[in-house]
Image 1 (cartoon, rainbow over the protein chains, first blue to last red):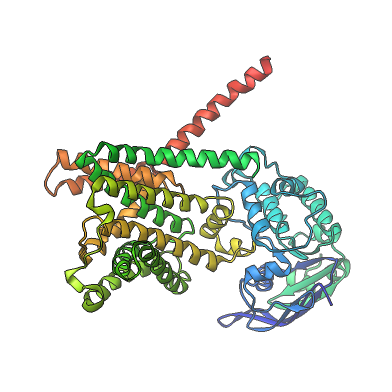
Image 2 (image 1 turned 60 degrees about the vertical axis):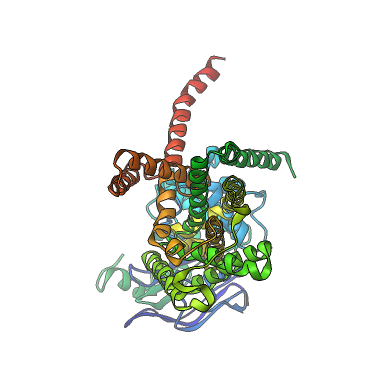
Length: 242
Length: 325
């Protein structure tokens, strides 16, 4: 079974179980949404899968092979890349230099997106203008998000985790990033989108996973999941309706 | 090799010639005082380059005197056994090996903790020398073979060669293979790891290379007079000097540590001339602090900033000219 599989994983910070015995699958070739209220464990989930915080229990399988407990750079080599919600990139580096790092170090024989040969190509593919040696210190938030996606794509992943890549973007920028995610998916990458905005999830994904208090709350088609009484309660509290 | 690569190579070689030229000129002029000053500057510059290579991965060392001293002691003690060439190589490899071992433990420490670890390491190496008189001569010191037959101008020529070698090593780590990855490690190690960079391995590599280049500086220094005691090489001065030189000249560059070494020596001489006695050290310290506050990017960084600003003001004119034509 390819794609990404999480089997009985737990991450605990002291007494708090940020991820509590979660089992789920992200099927190959899908765009899946991971949603949940603030503090539900979404970011911890991404940190766990990408190897930054290894799970205390359970197994993580990527393309059928276990990646549990591997170093983050090894997990990248196995074909899983992630973005950071607030990317802190070195201000003194140019767009191309940042993208060049995974191009050089993320050993991979998987192909780059069609028509992309260099760091500059990849920057343009993600809607950036790399010309003139623009340094990262001068980039806007939306360009930093695009750069994060470009950097993750330069890892040439099979599975890409996008951690709130569209949070705080303008409507226009959001539309462009959604189009980009569709294009990445069409090129054969399995995508997990961590998002807050329901509209984005409804348009982009056919599969949604809901976390609440570190546990799997619901899973299935976005329309069905979003109308699930338990999910509504987790977001809004008892007695409210959408 | 393609044309662009060829151009870069020619530029780099030109740069090394430009760096070496003043030192060679002083050596050929055989001016006794200036030769000593130039030797001091070249040794400081090599040590500062070593320090800067490591600092590009975000590790601030306050213990480079340890590698400086180990390079001096190692080359001195191994030369009688292995001959001058192999003796020096073995001395530097010893520095690299110790850096790898130390790095395997300390590079997992974050920032300030790493700095403190390097400082304590340099202090404990000094104690190690003092308690092993049979092996290292203890407090009475050692008598390394004198460099270049004891002729200062020839010593200067040799050390200038070492400086160019250190500059070339520094440039390797400013190339496309290492510079972006090192800066990413310094700025955000999680992001580097998430980009496939083996963070700890690259940090250890930087530490080993830095230790070996610092050892080269120490080997040069120990060979100057044919006599070295622990207090000559394992002192706080050699711990702080590379940091002061690099910050003064400009971090993350090859030119910065060289310019910084010249500027610091100039500052020292001027302060000594006008203040005299021991008081000059206070003035000299104060001026360094002023520089750090006023020019955080160092002399080279400041000059680059000026150039960039000039280019930026020129650009509108260029655009106008294009529109007019």
